[in-house]
Image 1 (tube, each protein chain N blue to C red):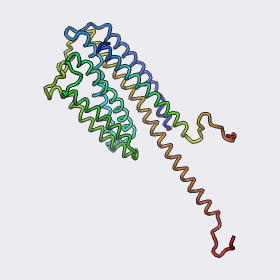
Image 2 (image 1 turned 180 degrees about the vertical axis):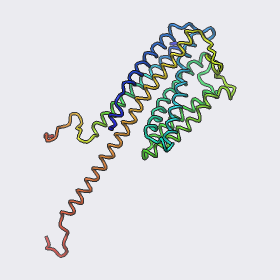
Image 3 (image 1 turned 30 degrees about the horizontal axis):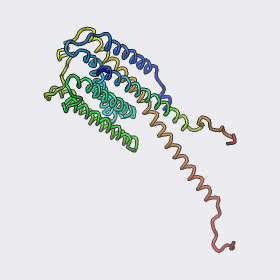
Length: 52
Length: 264
């Protein structure tokens, strides 16, 4: 692999990985906010009045 | 307005992201396969379609947003957490671009200069920029009241901003290995063939669009993070409040112990 190919590969791969990480972080915090809002049950949790 | 509404993905941000990816795709295609090799540097000149563009984002766009946002936060009339979050988002994205500037520069410097790294003024001041940005991100993680954290970080961002003119003028102030303007001279005369110039320009546009998209998403993460923190604080305070109320209620309903009562 030449220096040119390595430069392009590193730049594009780093930006791609960082972008994916940001999107995943955004999704995780959106879920955390939804779960922390009062009256919102986490997914899979028993409904009110349901025996655990 | 809830944080989920604030952090909703605006359509313009998606459009910017798509345009950025398309522009970047064209830059790579033109840069690697279409443009001719340089008369002096051969194929190594192809790295110059991405390295100066990445450095421009790392230095000028990040500097503008981080310093501007921090100044607007510190100015009492414009004080808003919007500016603090925007500055914080730009510094994190800036650290990624600063690291890429150093790596792509080293990959070009090794075959052209013969070294991966040298303590040249431009390289050293750029490395200092990266270190200052990492320091800013560490400072942001120190637990503190939101207003105190924002003020601290605004001051830190202004310290980062001091390094930006040093990086820019380093090639003029010191006799450095790093060259000055290559494609465009101070008189705005372009010294490259049209295909090279257009690819160079497209690279600037592509990385700038990518920066705006990353900044937008990182800003949304910042808003959501703060909102979750506020929500958790509210929940723990209300739990504490209800515990206190229960204790007061329980002590009020319990009969007071009497002295000299019957032995059990």
